[in-house]
Length: 165
Length: 110
Image (cartoon, rainbow over all chains, first blue to last red; front, side, top):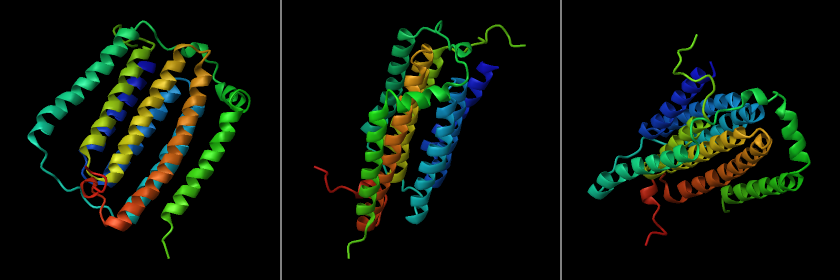
């Protein structure tokens, strides 16, 4: 069951990611990215990270992607213009991308043989409580610094978005 | 019942390989797309791929699983801040250049 769910979510994530690149209108790319994030939330649930799965849906799919689509609508984005790429870019670019993928995957396969499986039975299902305790205990200072980071980001966005009079 | 060749537990390396594939697709989008917002979305895709590998690594040892989740939480916070600032930059660029095409933004090109 776990394996079947993994394949369903993995196929959904990969297909949507490919669609993100293939699509020429940015709105369709944004919707594909929402699908990728939903599939990843399912994978997080399979990995026993309930808190991260919910935060993924609320923050990523809910907030950040709405911001993206908001900007796309605001700027009235239209279809991408096709450009002629140079021959070197076409002949070398795609093989190099495949090479990058093969490289990462071979390193991962060498380092992590498939005998290492998930320990779903060891997780007791209430690690959201543990995450909260960790956040306000071991990681209290980074958590507080995070709020300063958010404040700086908001101020930066407001200052940049402001029209000069 | 499941056939024998399908393992009951998913190997961690499968999650890592999926994460690598998503990352490479993000790189491809970053290099291939010409709309600046889509380029930005590819960066988000790469961040998501790395988050998945974090959770998978944390899952290998359940003693560090919570640490991995906290780290992913911080990555999400940084991604949210980055999205806010980046989209503000995109709006400014569009206001000045009247274009979202990355080929038209060449002020810093050598």
